[in-house]
Amino acid sequence: MAEATSNQESKDYGIGVPVANPVYKLKGSNNYDWGMKDRLARVFDPQSGKTVMLAFDHGYIMGPTAGLERIDLTIVPLLEHANCLMCTRGILRACVPPTFNKAISLRCSAGATLLTELNDECIGVEIEDALRLNASMMAVMVAVGSAKFEALTIRNLCKMIETGNRYGLPTLGVTAVGKELTRDARYLGLATRVLAENGAQVIKTYYCEEHFERVTAACPVPIVIAGGKKLPELEALQMAYQAIDQGALGVDMGRNIFQAEHPVAMITAVKAVVHNGEKPEAAFKMYNEIKAAKKGGK
Ligand code: R5P
Image 1 (cartoon, helix red, strand yellow):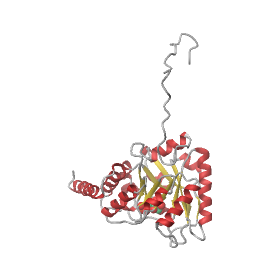
Image 2: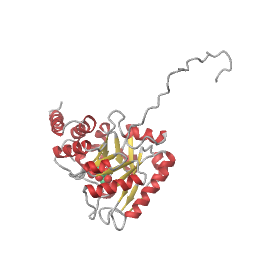
Image 3: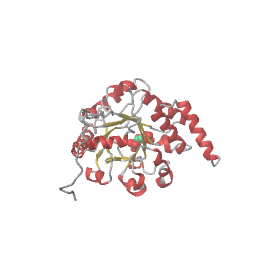
Image 4: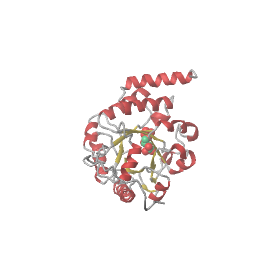
């Protein structure tokens, strides 16, 4: 208990020393409250300003996807290399050790699987469970341009942003895939901007070969790119490099990591590209060296 008398006299007021008022550097994020900034600082490494998110939420629409049949065996060894995990609450509770203690981007929209019609989603996880799971972001899919599901999924996004803002929990807006949705700069630029205008604090989208820099330039908040279908490792590293070079602030990569011949080597190489700006060829060399060393039992 504090004593009322005989305390040391307070005298170190730093008179004349201005109070530091550092800017929070993450794109578009300087005006958020402390809790939201703290959560974003868990997702985006404060040193590099970038993130490697490991995505393994595919099962929520695809069931036991190749490489994710046994998450305890294939994904858990990768966790230490990621800044943030992108996963569902079912897998988080069942397979991810709570000692992981880094950022979680929790898949909160849910709905139709590959067997029916993709993008017909609702809010499957409410903010109470996201907070209970100590999530750092809530991920919501939005099907901009879908005649059937555009308005529905934008409503889902707005609802999560509304509650997320109340509690300081950022929302990751995820641009959808779908037969009718293209992946060029015009579409991706429109979709990402719409999500940001509605208040998503981070946007996940796809890389496109032409004018991706326009997509990132016109989006006032951080963009991370999904990896998409499995590519040869060098091509995946080239895509990550180009995306970062053209303004993305990270990757949210799944199949190109966990379906790689050597997933630990691949996530290490991806990290080098994202956080250190390593050129793709050098990162691919690193990938091959780690792969060879592990095979040789080193
Ligand atoms: C897919 O269901 C999820 O949204 C994934 O998190 C996302 O597509 C990233 O994974 P990948 O790099 O395999 O595309």
